[in-house]
Length: 592
Image (cartoon, rainbow, N blue to C red; front, side, top):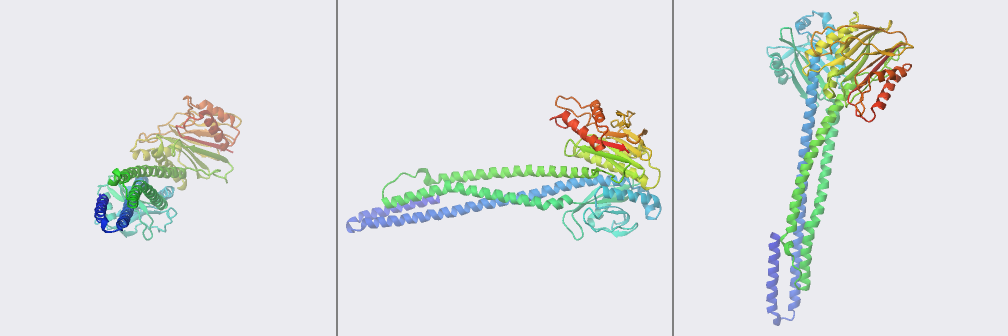
């Protein structure tokens, strides 16, 4: 409106000056020339005023747009950093708690004082070995058990201290039994007190920033209780923030780059709109003023253009554009952050699952007396099926296959814990030099461990066999799993049907029974989960046990690897384009 008033003022002054000069026309022969010169000078002044207004308005609008988008970009970056860090911390807090809860099972709370006095040496060493195996299996930096001084929680005594420097490239040195150390700071003292006084089930400490000698990590503290329910010690697990350390800088770079690109695009768009809706109308006003000054005749009316209606509409359009863009940026940020969180969780869970199962074949190239091969194809990014095989000693091979109720990340975490407990319990017998425990004894221990900490009420079916390689005798315990198929040399595959035991995790103190399978040289054993016979094509027809046995018998002369490939090809051809609803897990063993 200031510019409109300016134009009205200029036009009024022009008319007054012209009338004065017309009245004096008889007095001077140069009147018309003077009028034209004055009119041209006035027109130039008008043009200068318009150009000055146009220039200041453009720079002001561009500055406001860029500043607003920079603020939005900063807000987006801050929100993304906060949400990304919170998601990683939550994931680490939950999974590390389950790790610590499982590790606490291995420590006898009644014997803490005896350990510190040098008693129970054999049990102490056995527990220490179990914790060491667990430390490396779970890929954590530290697992340590301490007894705090409950007078002021200013110091503590070391009971167990297991170190895995390979996980985070650290250089920790182990504490000896009975080593006394002051508490790190007031935060640790408060958490020790909360755990010892029963005010907290567990505590978590985060270290996100790099410190001298330390990498970003999370520490979970959980109480160890005696048979009376009193807290006698505290178990701590330190786990590095590997994903946060590797992906954080790249994540921030992408966010900042995206914000800058959107800012540049928006600024360029605004300039184009300004040329059309601001500069063009002002140029039209300038041309009309110049024409009038030159021709000194009435031209076409400017109409609403002299009232800056176009500029007002432009301002409204830019306003709406900014609002729509901010909403779009917010929606895009939420979607992108959610996708990144899900991708990170699934990648992390997939890594855990792949690392917990043997996947290098041939598994035992130095052994010529047997051959074994296994595979797992999850229905989703991660699955609840699992398999495992390992030498307990030179004469005994443990073979495991299982199927957890449910699917996805919860099932994969449940299967990982179950697999690790089986591995630790089975290997413990061999390392102590005693007679290898039976399959039923191992599953009884596993069942009680799982049941005592099974808040989600999940369960798992397991087929566990311990092969005596020199004789071919397999001691088997079947906890609700599918029946195995055996192929005698020069014969066909047949199902070994036996009475099933109760699945793991349903109730405590279940009595599990063993049975034996006798293999001779050239015999084969095939294990599978229900994803094989229950594979379904689009008309809901299942693959079935008979079709599975037929395929096995067609490939009975092949190696274990080739047998599994034959089953996989057969299932894929049968299912066709139908989606996979269940995990597909198989294992084949041959005694040579």
